[in-house]
Length: 599
Image 1 (cartoon, rainbow, N blue to C red):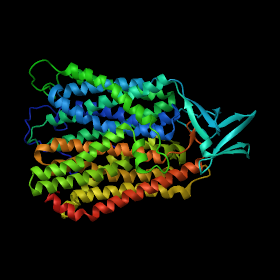
Image 2: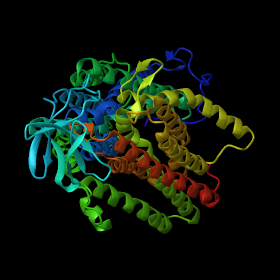
Image 3: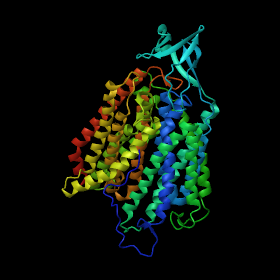
Image 4: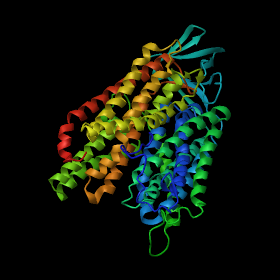
């Protein structure tokens, strides 16, 4: 996900009302340049680490797909949940500037701890109750995939492990099948030093906490640069968001590149270093940010030290959440809804209960305290929030199943070069940067003719496009080569459709919330909006777990089976999301009446 500017934002600001003696940058307060750069470096780190995270978990720690996808989904879910608390604490006690500095430092420490991953896990296979060490040729790079098979030594013979479609495994002596092991009698795992696994979870916990303080408050400082009637505000945020996308592109290029050249430590070290740069630019600002994001006036002692201490102490809570997500069992086949709920990690239970309470309780509250129009507008907002969950569930496969698909079943050569699977995520911000002005022009042109789609129609189009992206990718199977890899261009097309979808929904979402919400609970509704994204991120991890394939030592045992599993999962997700988009378009006229002219 790459944050996008509000549609129709002017590129050239009207500065006729600005004091000509005031120092400016591109016609804006000069402080915007520093905030632009600070945000660029923070997003460099966030998206750089996000690009390699699932590969790191599956290839260094040798986690099974189910474990790795669960951790990625939980991490991204918390990234969108903690800013609700971080923004509240800054508004009431810290001030935005102190929150940003604290958040940057905590994230820097978290990223730095990721550099200490210890030795790669040692793979093993348990066959009919007997454990065997697994051998395989090393990949050319730490993120690379080796085509050499995984083998085990049994009775003096070197046997190749080959997975079958029904989950059973063949043990091959050359091309001869010596034994077929039923699925129930075969499992794979890896020995990992508990210290380094615990350190990984500690690092992710610190990053989540730091992000909660940083993410909401850097934008608050940008908003404070402008008076309420300053017509440059929208254009200023457009420039600010450009920094986000530039940082995203750079991070997704350089972090995987350094990992490939020098090792995991190098990729994580650079994302830690840029967080320190962002902190230093805020801490040593030469007075440029004085008066912006300052703490509110408080009586009594400054509560900042207590807040910092409690934030760091909460690491234990987040560590438990990550550990619970990682070790949660898979619901047994045939266990039904009760079995699925029982197997759902603690984080999932909390998110679902909170979200259900919000989407049911808020309309009931609005009906009791508001008039008929207010109730209907709030109901429309809640319905769109629910559809927003569906969008992010599919869109955020980029951080998990799409990256694993790129690694295992995609020919990554393009224009004579070979890219890493992690780097494929950069197609999204590249398309966002390239096509945001185009789509903005299209909306303006349609608006002049009275044809611009309404908010709910744009939401519906976003669902159709993100679903279509997966359906297109699911159709690529017939073009796979002998190694069961499809052309990278299929993935490029999917990311293009997803990026256009993002431009249809992301810019208008928060604006929709502010327009439809009852005035006295706009802040709470904005929290519900972020909660919907958080739930979507969590479900994205769960959906990626549905695409999990059998691996031994971080490598798939059957590339053909992996390809078919991914494509079937992508088709199912795509069809369901297209169906949700159709439903939203069908009820669009009814939603339009509920929205009472808000467009």
